[in-house]
Length: 347
Ligand code: KG4
Ligand code: ZN
Image 1 (cartoon, rainbow, N blue to C red):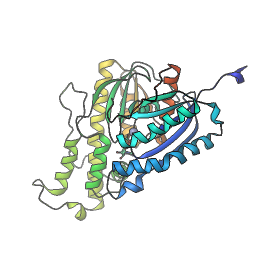
Image 2: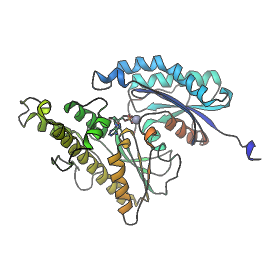
Image 3: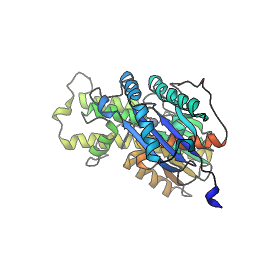
Image 4: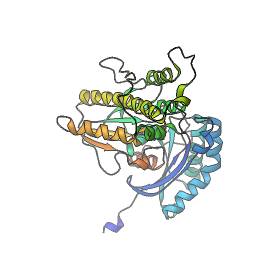
């Protein structure tokens, strides 16, 4: 009888940056609950995430967020099979809050503890409803990372390239600050770019040589700064005297430069491993222009490639992606123990 089939419920916990999140996901795909407490308002006046403030806010929110996720799921906590937590990469003093909570719950409920890599979890959002045809190239574009993978399975994406300086999302955020647009910068740049001309200003596309699969976005960010302050950097930031249209043109031209690089590196990686599928995840994957242009690239490839993109609500940090990846680790019995620690780095 199909009703007898045991469903595996994983509680996912995420505190790597500025979202406190918990979710319950069944069998890696069925979202039973998802709760995200965003700290955007707390960090807004600083124009970026302040680690100390983030950590304190996680401490305040972690218990109510987890409780809410369990309530929303409407399942008895006895039915939760394991606790998955993002333990790397991220801000250590933020990660430690989720890791400590997960360890405590695992100990008290006598359920296995599963450590999840936050970047690999971002990719999970892209494959929850449809599986990739292998080989696949996966790209995570977030505030802290820009990473390309040879994706063979959820458990072992192999890193092909990463940013050598700023992450793409970080560049969006910094350029938004230069343009005096609202925090967080990514969505503000996207909004402003909608009425701008992407060809108005030729910002640099740093490709780091013909073979490289690494990224560099600090150059394009600095180019926007020079554009706004004058080449000697001594001038006033001209933004205050720019028209709305000029600001839109800078935003659109910057966005086009970043997307051109992301697409070119993805194309190179796909060619290198003969990819049949491209996966896209991470906060910047919420950007419609990036989604549309990657779609065009995949459709016009010969032969066309399958494209799996994270749904918009699961692009930015959330715990559904953590619980979903936790399910694959649960099946593989890849458990952590109470010595688990947060780690700032991780690929
Ligand atoms: O994955 P995420 O939530 O956090 C990290 O793991 O870093 O990504 C956050 C990043 C921020 O830099 C934010 O500005 C960017 O994703 N972002 C966007 C958009 N929505 C969020 N960037 C461009 N366009 C968007 N629509
Ligand atoms: Zn993230």
